Image 1 (cartoon, rainbow, N blue to C red):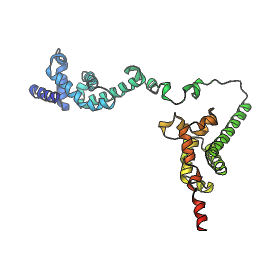
Image 2 (image 1 turned 60 degrees about the vertical axis):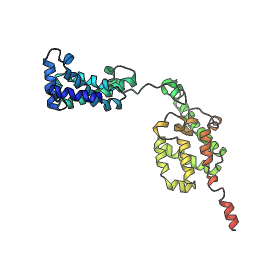
Image 3 (image 1 turned 30 degrees about the horizontal axis):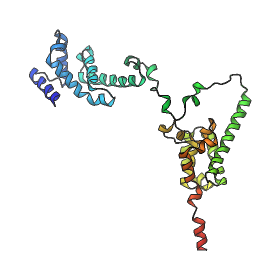
Image 4 (image 1 turned 30 degrees about the vertical axis):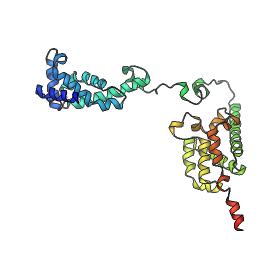
Length: 293
């Protein structure tokens, strides 16, 4: 309240209404022509307080102090572009918005604002700690993998096929160990793997199969069990889970080297798969039919 009263009072006493485009343009011309105008003119102080108040929401949106936005506004107001613009406030607002964006980007990239304004620098993502992820970065990032350039392509392809087949069999074994009927587990997982080879991505496969009621009817799997099967095999498609075990899914975890005993120690996975086993839904069905007979 003190700042608002002071700003209004300064505007009235000086006779200059810098809240309008015409008033701001006239004030900027006067402050530019007068020696020491920005340092000693009380209207300049009121203008900066008004700018701080005006751009405070924009500064908070980007995690900055309101006076940082006012400082950016001060730099723009001293330029010829602001003094000669048709709408000086529009020029100032646009420049402050851009400055706030790159100030926030610079804080995320741990660099200067000047560097953050360069496209080849701002294209990078914010730094991450190794501890922010469930698995060490060295376990899956290509930059930390060592490959043999002189390898035999045919043998590499054979190993890849063997690894994929092994991952499918381990996934089937996992579901069978968690109370899924063997025939249902094998049919469902093989159908998912077949769809995955056609679409090429886990997210696209998850979306396509989640809506494929025809396939679910042919496999005779309840809706809840079908959804749990897709999520367990392909992972949670939400971007927030992309770097976690829940986001990778059983198939990818098996392919990157995790073993069946390791998966069985994942309490969340074991609970989700076992509770979604089809026999849980039909557990009392045969008994009721027997009673009626």
